[in-house]
Image (cartoon, rainbow, N blue to C red; front, side, top):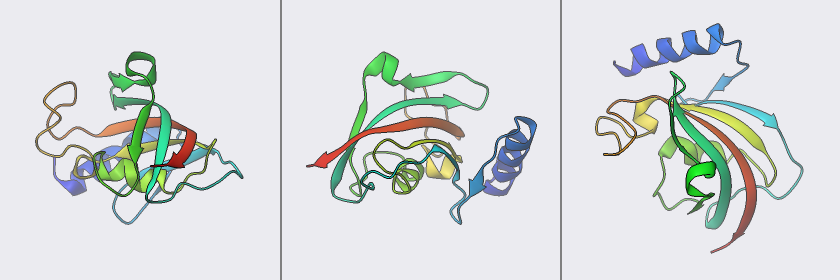
Length: 133
């Protein structure tokens, strides 16, 4: 699928599932289901997430239940660019859903494990904590 076809596919998925989502200029889809008034996520801080990442068909690829919380330094790469973009919209305690088109996820390669080539990913996240590196 091309980027344009992916966006059409995601739009149809969002509409068919009655999701209330917005889209950024990069193509990231997001819905913040529980916004918090706590401290915001910023670059150069470590964010700790309760998360589940799945394919749009519902196949769970990774989750906190299986591998523990996801922890990473914001702004330094190491995670999908779409996840990082979305996380920067959140605060400690926030919960959100993100849909990452493949160019904001693992692209043509996948991750050589559970995420196939050109996969569109759906992330369900909750920001558990934000701390200094």
